Amino acid sequence: MTRNTFFEIARQKYFSASMKNIALSKKGGKRIPDVEDKEIAREIIRIHTKLKKILVADGEWKWINENKKPNYIKALQQGNAETLAAILANVFREDASYGFYTYDTDSLKTSIISDLNIWREFTEQDDISSLFMPDVGRAHGITVEGTLIAPFQPRHDYYALKIKSLGPQTILEIGGGYGGLALQLSRRANVKYINCDLPETLYVAYYFLKKAGLNVQWAIDEWPDSQIVFVPTNRRRMIKKADLVFNGLSFSEMSKKTVDDYFKLINNVWKPRYIFHQNSNVLLFPDSPRHIEVLARDFPIDKKYREIYRAISPWQGGSGRYREYLYDRGDGIDS
Image 1 (cartoon, helix red, strand yellow):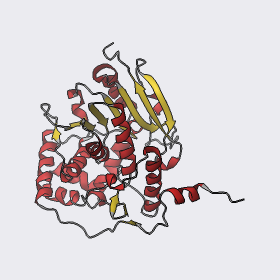
Image 2 (cartoon, rainbow, N blue to C red):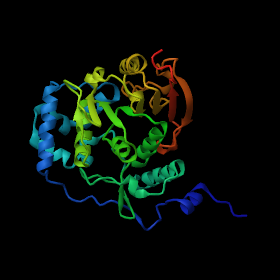
Image 3 (cartoon, rainbow, N blue to C red):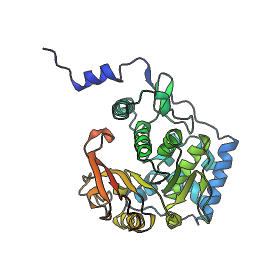
Image 4 (tube, rainbow, N blue to C red):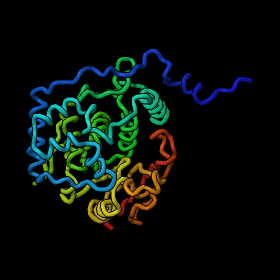
C-alpha cells in the first residue's frame, strides 16, 4: 500500500520547490534614488524633525534600533536626506527593514512556498496575481509564473481577507511593519486604515506605500481626511475610534508597560468591536535579559470582550509558538 507524505500531498495539490515556474527573484544592482525617492526622503526628514527626532522604541525593538539599523538611524538622526534616499531606494536590502522583512536566503524559497500553500488552503484563493509585490526598494522573494511574491505577503493577504469578512469600516493596525497588510487591504476591501507604529518603522511603510501608488497622510498636529492615516506611537492618543484593532507579532515583543498602555486605550477609549491578533504564547528565550516577551495569554483584554476563537497560527513555520485570537465586544460598545 502506498502512503502519501504531507509533502507529496502538498506537491500534488499546490506548490513545491521542484516546480519549474517558481524561482528566486533576481537581486539586481543597487538602485540610484530617483526624484520621487529624494522628495519622499526630504518629507520623512521634515516629519522626523517635527517629532523632535525622538526614538521611542522599547523591548526588542530598542535593541534592534541600536544594534541592527545603524546606517538608517544615523541618517534619520542627522537629517541626511541624501543618504536616506539611497537607503530607501534599496530599502528591502538595507538595514532599515531589519526585523519585519527578514529571511535567511538559504530558506527563502522554501519558506515562501510553504506560506503560499497555507494561503491557498486557508483562503481558498487561486489568483496568485492578488499577491503581487510592487517593484519598490529592491523587494525580493520568489517569482511564480512571473509574479513576484514577497516574504509574508501570503500571510498579509490571509489577514486582509479575514478582516474584510468581519465587516469593519475603520481598521487600526498597531505595528504595521513595511505596510504589507495595508497593501492587501487596499486591494481587498474599501476600508479606512490607520497604522500606529514607531516613527522609524512608519517611514519605511510610508515610502513603500507611496511608491506603490497609495495616498498616505500623517496625523501629527491634526487628523487628516484620508483613507490611509499614519500615527506615530507617541501620537496614539489622537486616535478616537476604530471598529477593529489588529496586531501581528509585535505586542509580545513590546515591554509590559507599553502593552498595558495600548490596552488601556483599546479597552477604554477606542473600544473597537473586534480585537484580532497573532502573537507568541511561548517564551522563545526564557533566560534572555534582552528578548523579554509579554505572552498573549497575559494581554490585559477587558472582560467585556468575548473570545470568539483561538488557534495555533499556521504561519511562522508552524512552530506552534504563535496563536491567533479573535475577540468580540458585541453590541454593548459604550457599556
